Image (cartoon, rainbow, N blue to C red; front, top):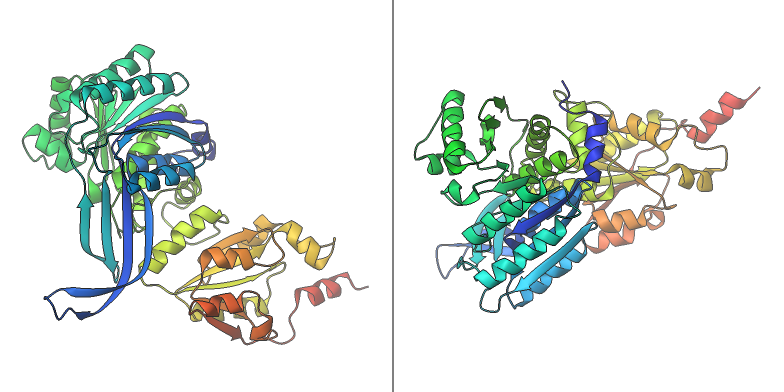
Length: 485
């Protein structure tokens, strides 16, 4: 049963919110461990790749943007190079405006995770948790008040790094209530009273248990403990994230429990950010809290199957809603951002990513053989599909015989195909540069010298495979026979 309509998911792009809280930088250093150091009994990690992305409140923003929402981020950074990296990453996000106040004696919070073989070896944090000054808190509150004039609600993302003080939390919530707009809080403090007046808070079960002074286990116990916390703190509603057990949305007169939608848990980093972002975007778009919570539950199930501080895209959510119990069947073509996100997860797991491309206008046994061989040479297969306009330029005005969406649906139905990406250019060269596949596959009617992107792929150590051709099959010849008298 779907928990939301396609129209409701599409409506997330109309959301506009303000987010205030602790922004940070997450760095991931990926490498390979093959030996132990002679200097100490520790693994030696040979670094192969490094990435940097926004964390904390910044990851909430990334998740909002992935849903198509617009957001104003208000936070504090230090006077250092990391703050510059945070600023650049925010500028690269569409639909984001940001105000970063510099506090000279405060380092910009950063976390470096060292990963090998799909496992974290070490995390190194650079931070202080000293509360910001009242003067800076008042500046942030003023920025929230300005941003909230054009936004539907405010998110307070409290990571306990000092930005969300008692003064800031109470004043932001007061501004939101005065404006008649929700204030949604991801809490870190054990004292929920500091969020008094909030519309909704989103603790995980451990955080709620610490605030309640006990460890509720059954759903009835969780609901009872939650209601007492809500009453004592003066908060309207609580959404408790319970890991593998799902989520519980509880208010004074109702309780809704949602089982987990996760099929595979690979990395839970940032899942709470996905929950509050999806919840806030949904409420800002006009969805009732119960529907918003169910969408947040779906989004959380998606991101824990990815690596790092990942995000859920609207197309991920809609695909999950369309196929709640079955991962097979047609899937919509992926946008490049969503595709790269998925491909990165595969690579981080150590899976070999293959790539092939073509028009695939009328799927025939030759195509099926090519795709089967390509999948056999890799763990995951990405297919680059020429757009309708591209096919017309290459094959003539009478082509394609099927639209790009129809061709993508047929391809994605095949067990051998993991991902379909439509590209507008005549060749997949730009796509190859972004994907950087481990294996590039084309038919043996090409030579390696004639395969587009072969030099590039081989240049970084990738492999080019020429698949055997099944004789007697050609889309052009098939269409000619169909049109013959």
